[in-house]
Length: 240
Image 1 (tube, helix red, strand yellow):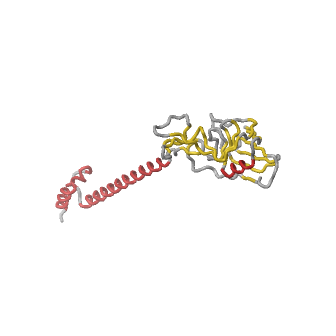
Image 2 (spheres, one colour):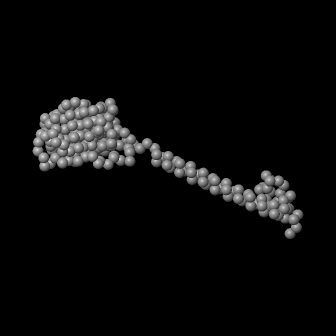
Image 3 (cartoon, one colour):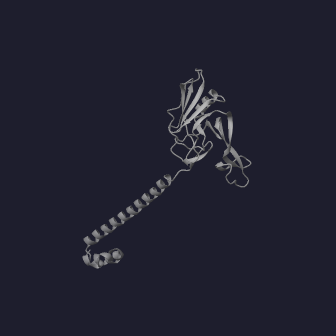
């Protein structure tokens, strides 16, 4: 085929692609093939870049959604703080007081977030704690156990529920505005040992920092051991 014929044919078929590079009829067969290759290569790269950008954008949206602030963590006696990966593993709490007699006493360290249980001055147990958060601090001083209630239910904090028992609004104070058709249901506080006013030791959730409304929360197995070993009048010291 003659070059002029190729130029004419190629110019008719490729005019749309070649206008930006020059007049189609002036291209040789080699130039036409080279131009066609460049265009196809450019189109491929453009398509790849568009797809890659879309994938990156979708990935950013997905992981961004995963990193949004998690909902608050519910716990016995109230709600405070954002959800973490989970409470820290308890490597502190232990009980070794079942086979030992003697007068019981309890020392609570707010700074350490630990409770120390003694019998006749000898340490027989340590428990991790979660005490009152800022603004609802656990009181400091010398106290004693004034009430024990294994199945205690809070009269101040809990949930608003409907008549079927379904939670309408969780982790509220009894003084909070009540949704229509709901009523207050107090939070359970197993193995409650009242110290002063509305403050006591009991089983509850431990997020790893002070988070309660003033009570002293501990793991359930420790609360049970403390509960069975104290009596009304057992001294409790709460230190900074």
